[in-house]
Length: 139
Image (tube, rainbow, N blue to C red; front, top):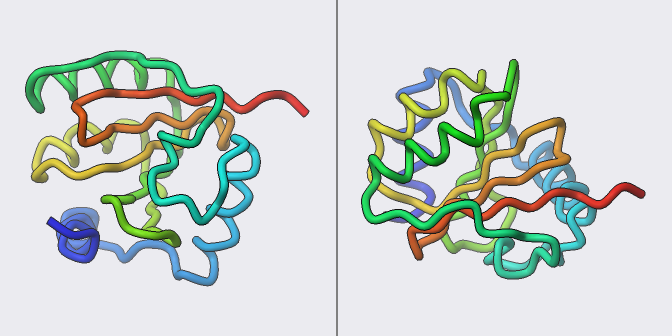
């Protein structure tokens, strides 16, 4: 499934469109630089130097459970980035942390990143059924 199809499904479920490309593009660039990732890289998770494996999983339900462990301390607004192995800028939504797991549970698998702690933490779900975490270095 390509990112346009996933974006359409997400927009329908959330009842709102992703951020405008003129807003998402510069924000994604800044986020990439914060995590020492080349902003034009397609697989950010493969280029983040501080990425650590959080969990490998066998199926979607197990993946959501492990993601839930990472989201447990998250409060308030987070961002969902639909990367789906396409070049940036990607669709980005802001949503409440409590909305994410139910939303993902309704969708077919796709590659995404979740932005936590105002951009200090990125959680990637890869096509290898692996959750990776990147924590930005303090500057």
